[in-house]
Length: 288
Image 1 (cartoon, rainbow, N blue to C red):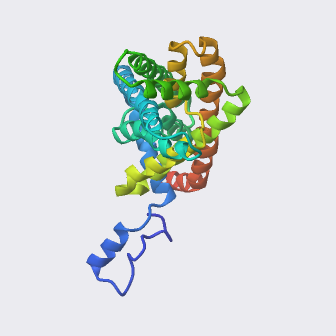
Image 2 (tube, helix red, strand yellow):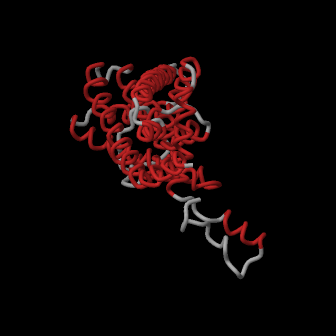
Image 3 (cartoon, rainbow, N blue to C red):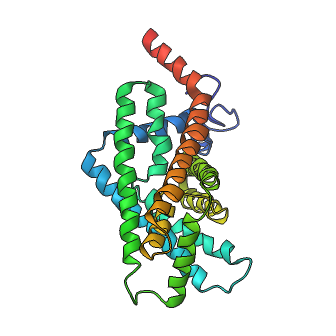
């Protein structure tokens, strides 16, 4: 630990050694520690095989479909009112809870985790590795959402009220203007990357952290490229939207916005806060 950044209570004259250790365990993590935890996760992701990324990405896409379904299930049982969206939006968090806490490969998480190794090393090989990771994970996330949306079409599985709710949510995903969707996606990418940054400090509150941040994404009707893909795919499969609307009206602006929010507003800024410490540490290692 760098000079001047000792854990709270570690040198307190009023505590014995055991109490000092307890105080240190309850101290908040320093930004550099958070950075290194997430960077190491990113290194592990970049080293995963194509097969592992494919399966994990597909699993995450399927899991994210439960955000769409659960929100529709709750919405269907609520009366039409101004507060229905506030309650139904809790369902949107379900897919994120499964994918994030289940350690499945979700594209928007990698806009932070996989980028930190690149910002640290700044070499071409890492950039190529990120391209491989992003391409496989994004495609398989989307394939998973399309498969899940197709399963929702099986007749008789859900009530008419649930089917109607699925249709309403699906139409909302594809009918906003390109610029509006882009800005909404930027905020969503920003929040999801911040969630990843917070999780190492959350400890036993990881579930609550994922729940609260994704709930904000839901109530603000922000655009997430994977969760929203299940909704938009359902709209295409039921004939209320075209493939052109899926790719041009939803996927393109949402993908660009999520990447901008995750990379520029979180990865670059949060890396910048600790870049000097990283550089100093590297110089010490070379000097030693």
